[in-house]
Image 1 (tube, rainbow, N blue to C red):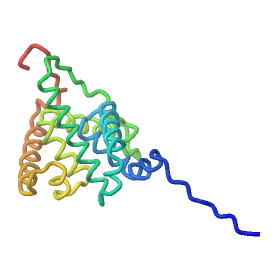
Image 2 (image 1 turned 45 degrees about the horizontal axis):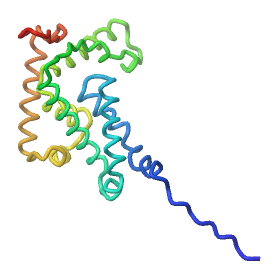
Image 3 (image 1 turned 180 degrees about the vertical axis):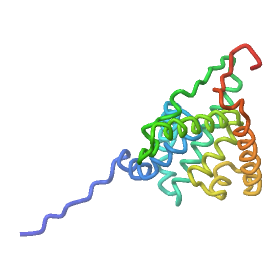
Image 4 (image 1 turned 90 degrees about the vertical axis):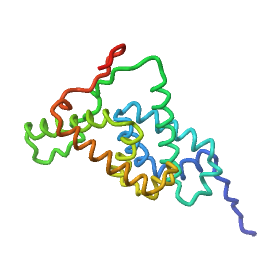
Length: 196
């Protein structure tokens, strides 16, 4: 009797997509979370990136570093969205209530006071980051929190490495000034129709 030859089925488009994107999904969500400062907005941003990735799957499969491509698309979508919001006639008040999740705080042997202090510090940092230009906030979050290199940021944004370094330095310095300001302890709300 002859041997039975099994032909390997060609992977479906969905399987190819999952193989390319799944290894980077947590990094994408983390970067989106730090850029948007909101769980819901982060999920929306990651979904938009996945749609772009699926549309450009053939190109994405040929790229040596798909994570950098995905993060670049995410950054561009984020910046475009923020620019659209800035031009919008309708401003939304952002409370940041969903920004702190105490379950994600390392609960080791932390006391309630330590958890409250940590929660308040997280809230202060998030409030300070809301005062920054969204583009610069995204750069700091991606570099300092997500660990994206200056070279990767340069590839994603199209800016020179030296420009990115100077923007990171100035933004960190501004963030430090904001954090040292007592006014940042209060939530940052933009009231529609006022200059506050």
